[in-house]
Image (cartoon, rainbow, N blue to C red; front, top):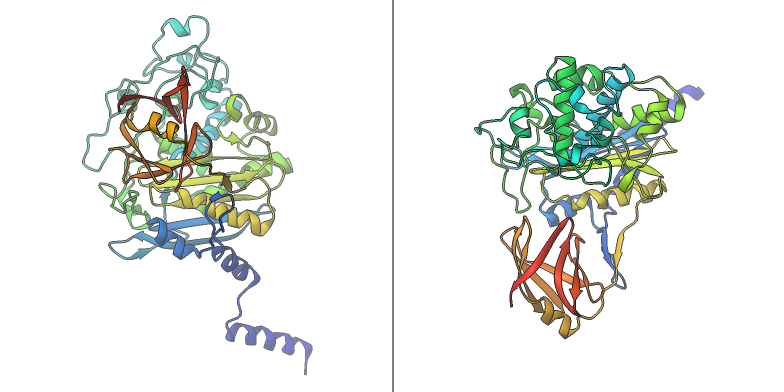
Length: 474
């Protein structure tokens, strides 16, 4: 028999017999080996399929994409984009990227720096025309600059934004900056350049500066400078999301499974939080940076500026992206109302991962990244392994009671069977806290760490993230 005919027969036989491609087999193996990111030392680690894990965590849907050696090797969607209409997640489903909007927007700002339209180190008020950063005692000798906005050292307020519901009056960017929306005004609250503090407010100033200079709407500016050139033609910064894209958009869900009001939030703070995209689209941002940084190919910005962008400053933050502590990777996380996302790209390898979910519960993002990196042998992602110690009675007595947490509210701690139980209006359900040592505890579900400091031998101050708390009632 002719050798070509034999080859053709084998291909047809494999196709008819339902044999999967090597890529499909690898993806199936990864998606059947999902393990919790939080692992307790000495405990066995369970393994689940992606479908099982979505159900366990009450997450409607997930979408992901993987780039290996510069090429998109696979993308998949699982679960529901909209549970009420039984609409599944596909690779075309749009998700809000949350704060991953920031490094993508930063790329456009850096392109404007390259052209001489903006400067990294001059006072942003020199370019702002429709509004100015109010000067105060902190800006006497140091100013808010684009570089400091990009790496969060500008000394600006407003960490993040809650978004607006459909039907709300949507403020202008200037109104947001002056506190006439649903957040405080964006102001300089400490000397620019002296320390790090994350500020979505700073990126909103950058958004206004860019539109003032270009004379275009921010979505149009981003289409022209970044989304179009990178082939992210199915992505948009338009807020509200245009009606024609509603059929592609995932509905956002709370951690308890309830829909976000109006199905998804609206963000006039587009540079900080407003990018709608898919993992397959968003990962093109990583591919574009890799081409410039690793291959010396011409791109939206020069290699020199790309090197600056990926150089870690305070708190390991570059000019847009965050840089891993070991400097092996760069990326960013995202958290909008009803959505969570993660982008991770390796610095010296053209490999990248994007994972997005339509839920306030983003714990599965890290779990999926653990499974993917383990399958490919990529470094930099390890599980969060915790050691649990016995809770001493005197420590439990110090903590038990009602605490007031700044900007959060009241939290009630009780001791139950060797652990702490915390309840509060800001929690969907009581959280179990396990002791890591005499002063440090972690949430059994998501690994959130909090610790207590003491004065005179008694624990009297609670620290959780950027917030502090004090005991107000036994």
